[in-house]
Image 1 (cartoon, rainbow, N blue to C red):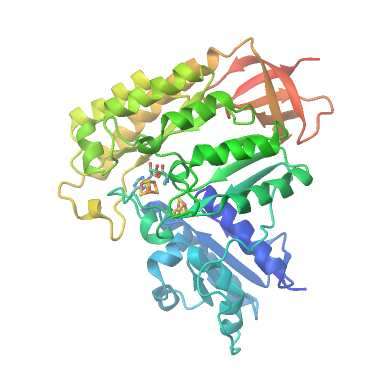
Image 2 (cartoon, rainbow, N blue to C red):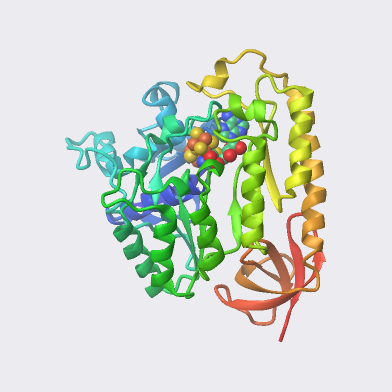
Length: 432
Ligand code: SAH
Ligand code: SF4
Ligand code: F3S
């Protein structure tokens, strides 16, 4: 049997896509290769969210080019957002590539492979078809469940609407059927995935909203697994969604709600559709209804024209919102996006020092937040072995916990008393 290796870059959507690619090719007779050297087919599932993500792919391609020279018959493919962004011209630049397929072309990969082998082949899918593909999942505990694809928001810095196309929601019946299958196979956690999950439902007949989908999922799973979702757009955070978070027992107490900047002026330039005050009001509403909720965010520093005052607004926002964690990035100009053409692009050095400022402050806040949890007993879903005999898992709030194990198995729920706090994880002891 031919062997396949998929190498994944980028976000959770890409991790799911890699599992879809593996699932699709398994149905064509491909087996998973452990090492790259064993593979007959290697697919790089790529990301282009920032320049650096793109560079990582090119450097990996350079290595594979050498491998391909050594191994006759090795087939090299490139899928994902960079494939969509660059298209067929990638083959010119990297003649070692046999096929290029964007995120919307996953269903066509078998046909593209046949073409690469020089066979006559028709393309069985006119368009994407993720309904029919059973993902070949990496984990037996946690599963991604795609509920929508694409994005219509066109934030001025972001390449995703160009790489993943317009928003398409998956019918609720399909989503529920997939979750039912995961329950049967003993999965303990699902994460509903989409670029903008809380605008789920656009174009579906009969209409259905994201909170409505969550209530239907609750009825189906009834506490048998944990439910998470990512990512939510602050503008689409409705009172109904906050109620769902407060009411539904399966929904974990965690919300990833990217703000991007603490300056309303910059938010407007980013085309985010909310102000600093709107955002803070929503955070306060969520916290008042779900006191235990942990909230995480994304921050971009060095957006074109970001002044020292705008940057200070981001720092003060972090102080005010007190996120459990923040993922922060230096602004990176992307092809076709509006902001790439904005005047007053900031120098790299300034972006770096602002990034450091954000990261230093957030590490301190994250540590303080984690310290408030010390002494508590929390449920941890065991994920596996960590370092030096420790087991590792996550709480419902999505906090990483390391604890001394005594025979606990991955996939089990244990009660852990939290004893030591760090910015990005906690340590504890199993309560017997
Ligand atoms: N759909 C999600 C996430 C998209 S990408 C959302 O809207 O929240 C994940 C994060 O990458 C974004 O939240 C943003 O903080 C960051 N990002 C996107 N484009 C970027 C760019 N051009 N430069 C730097 N960071 C960027
Ligand atoms: Fe990009 Fe904005 Fe869409 Fe998120 S909401 S994927 S940041 S365009
Ligand atoms: Fe990257 Fe595409 Fe995800 S650009 S972050 S892989 S949506």
